[in-house]
Image 1 (tube, helix red, strand yellow):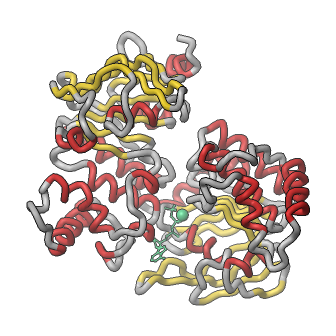
Image 2 (cartoon, rainbow, N blue to C red):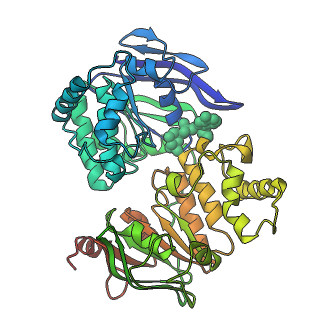
Image 3 (spheres, rainbow, N blue to C red):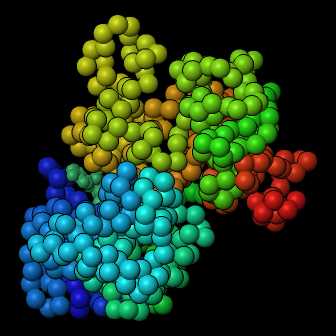
Length: 498
Ligand SMILES: Nc1ncnc2c1ncn2[C@@H]1O[C@H](COP(=O)(O)OP(=O)(O)OP(=O)(O)O)[C@@H](O)[C@H]1O
Ligand SMILES: [Mg+2]
């Protein structure tokens, strides 16, 4: 075995996150690791890559016991990890990031050697990506390729990919899966963390499932397990009801966007878009990522200017209104990139929850007492079941798992004064139970009379929740006359055919 982990345990204060976990990995295989949000997947991988130290357990590489005493030791042992949140220097080019990584090696190779290695790696791995533009200008999929190149450049034979497809579109994910298969065929041993059974089945050789810190299904060949085996291992006896929208009633137009055009740096992201969201309705906006969804949402929220067009919410013409004024009339936002756009990761749970309430005076005028902030957080933590918050409201948000971090945003944004909630990919990267939770909260908000604009690339999600559906493609919004396109019509609209 390329890698064997035996009896790994880890606690954070009194919270046992990993409990005697065994895991093994062979050269040339893709081993999928599944598990709910907070199951302990990233923690196990952080132990393997030297970021955390296990409380107990052994790690063997090629049959020999090793001590992964830190990230540098992991690199020396041939272990490379691509994290859920990338760790690239944004103003640097890809090449500069790779040189920077190489400069941390115990023996720093000359620049020319590194450049030659990069060229050779790009050819051998098929990781084609622009290396000479600042990383900030690259798409997420391209940045991910640079992260993978980085691990290979540092000599990784054991490659850990932590939820690599959560941030990709379906087409990009397919590209990544075939790349991963190629790397395995070249002899790399790959741990592939995902929430998507489809990916386990199409790209995995073996699969393991973590639940609440225990391996509940260990090292099984993918062909020997069914989808049902995997999902019941993941969620245990829990019954996750598939949310269905029943008898939606919707009222008058709440939001009306007309002729909206959004431009940036000479490019047109949204052109002449018309869209209404009614009170009590969930309006689904389907589309492949990168077709103007983010720019449209940000323009409606006042985070970027409209080059042309109008935004009206319940009679308020908001074309020139500030973000604060728009929030004041009830606009709320759940952005696609929660860690970058909705949370301050090093700030406590309580302060993240209070961030918007302080401004509106909901926590009192003038000085806000810390006790009020904590009490406010305490009641939201309770109401939204935000778990993993042992140490409670005072813990920084970065310590929460993905699902719990999303609950923090929901708790803050879906308050009693919310009139229009723009939710962009609100379940990306979440497990089945957390997805159902998010869906229920959105449905509840609509049944209280708020309007929800659900922007998603997940067609199942759009079809299950939406009262009406529109499609955005290359910055243009289209729908059918009745506002209820079926699957095939949505596909046509996405391609700009209908
Ligand atoms: N440094 C830390 N301090 C305290 N608790 C932590 C720390 N890191 C992780 N945890 C907790 O450990 C548990 C497991 O988290 P982990 O990130 O490993 O989950 P995960 O399976 O990767 O979930 P996700 O699918 O959401 O990424 C969570 O309850 C999390 O809050
Ligand atoms: Mg994780």
